[in-house]
Length: 336
Image (cartoon, rainbow, N blue to C red; front, side, top):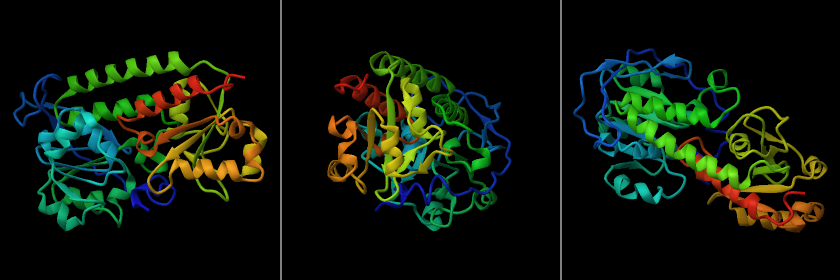
């Protein structure tokens, strides 16, 4: 099992150290210009991560990304030539970014050691999940700051007190804007966000506005872990314009019981697909379970498969929204 996938014990439920306060200056470039280290005169910019201002003295030239969402946001902003290294994917890189990704040194399959990180001589480290800066990651953000290395942690990966109360697509877009500001390419963020908003609007027209309830099954068989009120599963469900059957549960994910799932009788079941917990195995479990096999959504095979990498806050979220919208639109009898 890949460590980065162990959501409940590593990335999303572990508190992070407080951020270090920096002064941020960054340059500007046009969104259609090549990402280069040359920049216009720097102007003061302040961005905030996990409740504190973040930062660098100038647009970073040797950034290291940890976790797939951070890596793909950088690539989508055309910043591969600002990357001194990367590590820890959950899935193959998006095809449209594969060539750029191939130009970036891969420091480690999982998290690199602090020594390996420092060998890359980074001036900035950007990560999606709190565990990147934990004991199994590259070390405390304060220690890196002491070495003159700026850091940024995605809002969805912040400790609970600094995490968005209810994660939305706008929080993902805010992160993209933050990163673009750090690297002096704000126009690229606006172009990327506009493109993603258009795709989301098309997805909503396809599958939204229906009286459909969704059980988002992340994992677990004895006690299923389901998408709750406030994390990325609910963000995707809400963006489509349908209802989360477990939006009354606190947190991003929550454990429930199969008896409760049967009582709530969801119209659609999302099966999160990951190499360590494939959707096919989930489907087999449901169809063979003595009680669950009679659930109307199971009998009607009203399943929507969404890759794990499309469920984390990043540029792939739009793919998760599209997959759910398309699945709802195509499932027979879903709009009952």
